[in-house]
Amino acid sequence: MIDYNIFLIGFMGAGKSTIARTLVRELGCPLVEMDERIVQEQGMSINDIFAQYGEEHFRDIESKLIQDLGKQEASVISCGGGVVVRPQNTEYMKQSGRIVFLSATPETVYERVKNSNDRPILNGHMNVEYIAQLMEKRRRLYEEAADFIVSTDKKTREEICQEILDRLEETNEI
Ligand code: S3P
Image 1 (cartoon, rainbow, N blue to C red):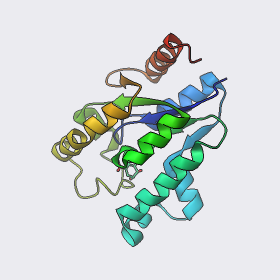
Image 2: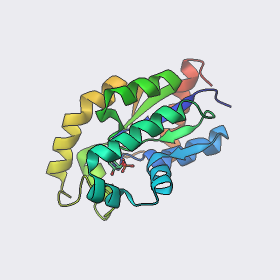
Image 3: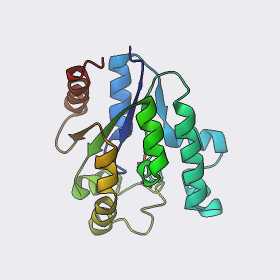
Image 4: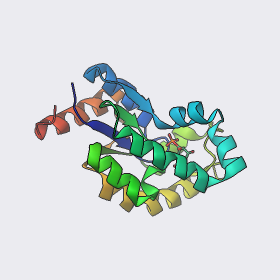
């Protein structure tokens, strides 16, 4: 069992949700899917929150949740892709756990998200160029927040999960 949170961060489509589900099977700890939790608590879709109240309001809800997660049972947490845009979120995550950056190329991300309509940040910009630009803007934030980085391109979920467990073990953290 773990006694700290494992936060999976990275761009939309980096595989955070899939890897989080695989990790909890190995670790036997709770799973928190941040976006799902927000949808449940607000009783609205992410698209509707953005459309009715705007991105800043969504970021406020996200920050409050990340802060609360530090006070709950140790879990694997699949974060929303924009969690690092507020520096205080990174501070909260560092205080309660380890942060793993799942990276992917813009082409991989595009292939994984191209048919999705529930990501307001990409609505109307569903193309590799836009994804590459936004990813570049955020890259430093992801890298600086991360305890370590795992690339997800051309790897199976089991390989990625094992890499994360090995890295945590190296530092005697599981
Ligand atoms: C966002 C990513 C989404 C969701 C929201 C904003 C972002 O999460 O939180 O649409 O700004 O990158 P996923 O990374 O799980 O798609």
